[in-house]
Image 1 (cartoon, helix red, strand yellow):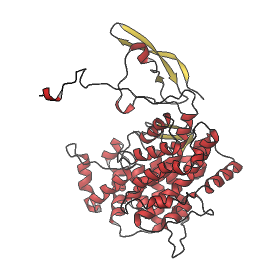
Image 2 (cartoon, one colour):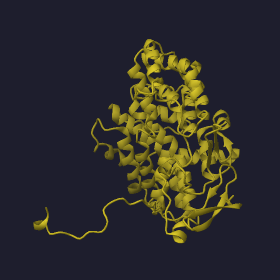
Image 3 (tube, helix red, strand yellow):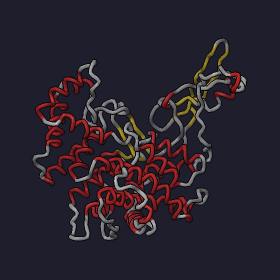
Image 4 (tube, one colour):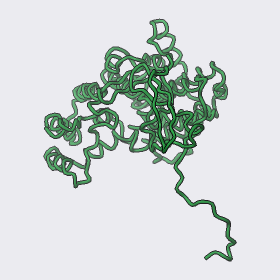
Length: 434
């Protein structure tokens, strides 16, 4: 369903000149003023740092209403997908636009399962990294390197190759993420097992060791699957926009996803749950929570509570409520005791949900707060948190990339600028410079 012109139009007036701007209307959400021909008509650009008021593309994949706390994948509320489906069903939905039938789901699951192995020469690739290399550094390199191993799925003009590349990345990302984890902690790689579901397979590759049998907990597997669903896509965020921008140049899909991983690595984006855990470590003990809560309320104190509130969701993050329940299920399953960090998290959650200041400011615990606690309880080190985020977001990136490639109106991205540097000047010979 394409955006349609609205009956209304916007008028831009500068001095004694005016121009009419078309207004386009989506199926839901705010209307947009079409300024694609603004420069040609007026000789001017718009100025929008961070593109926070600019629609960079037309998309049918994900919709967010931050004021109402709504997140829809292809029209389906995130709460329904997380409660009733599994991650691979969500992957199918994001890629193809509809929920699969039983036969389609079985075929899709089989396709992903049969592509989980990575080329054996990738093992040698890992030996080039230092033992203390950050797992995200490894992921950026390894995903980009996939284009050197799978030449038969890099022609973006071929729909079949685009499909193969999409399935390969969804299937191989858990394997690469587990390999990065194992390399990080100095344990041997564990190969994928075709008799396990997607999330159970990942847990097995991360935590199994050759010397004994590892049994995957159904509770942990289900929790991780929900985490993957909740992170699968989030509209035109920084990393998704990076993937689209890279893809607009015609770059191969593996390179585009590697670019998205590099962007996600930033602490302002994918590292938020790690930052929340660091804050809990700084607090240290539950009895110190009032001190830090008071600091958070003090406008003159630079301290901020990480994992509370959200840039997009002004009311509440719909993913956080699901993640809250999942977090408590994991903590109950594991029966963790005497962990000061988790004690701080549970008490801070209780305080924040009942404190008038937090309620008035709508500073509710967000998904990063709960996911950080959950992943730590599962046994993942903080260095792996963003890797898991990248694993889950891969399908969203691929869906967005695929949509962009198939858009006949797609053009190479080329943001403009407001230049404030030196005006034209002539070169001065070095001997004459002062």
